Image (cartoon, rainbow, N blue to C red; front, side, top):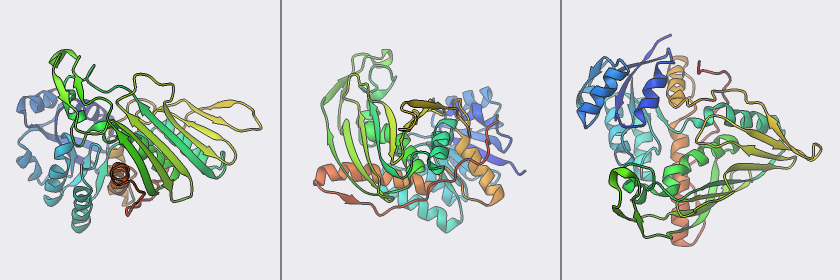
Length: 362
């Protein structure tokens, strides 16, 4: 087994779970890390026994790095991905793939031209929760797919996040922040979307930070904070997704998928585990289904490990750039539909990723 040598760019909070989990994958070897704040990179290097701390340019030019793990903030995703691809490195990036369709397309095109792979979070759909749902759908347990509802509703980040301003600037908002988890789960379970429409709103034009680090500061809201989208799937099913930072409390959470033979309760797509429940009329009640086919703990980085295995086996990887771009296209389409007052025909498509045939997480 040839190990993939990983160079990490961006050593903020999210890097800890990736670096911790990389130690559980024999296929991965983290060789170097970098950050604009060098002290942060040095801290992670010491904590996770990473051999080298270096400048980003030095990491990109290192011939011993196979894959760049891009954990920068979203405004820098495209820039770092393109720099890595042009340096001959495969790339795995945190969600979203990019902020704009143009940048997302450029990433995929550059990868194709250079014969390189692009992977992207979220990889939570590879967990036991959603993989169990995938198995039930593929087995025909709920029949032909009819529709789906997905809800992510809360009141924003200013009461707990140490630096929440970004979530209310372009590239933020509830759809671009949390939508990738829900849409990736739906696409992995139900297939690609061909047409969208939507409506967006903003209930609060200013937010007050109540988390301790920046208590009392005001945030000017510049993006929609309540977003409702309708999804026409290629297979004929119809979905609804609501993401909101304007709702104080709701009983509506998670994802439900409806079929001609029953209904399926899908677990939180921001996590790797259940519960998974199925309703079929002959049973007359919801049945809890044991989880099978993936990890149940916080396994962020499993998509990176799967990409490394795919490089060795010369097969498709699951958390791939085409699906990430399709999700990006859906999110932009919903926002554009609200502005333009029409349906948006999506130009992108992707394949449903293969179900996890084996548990690649120890």
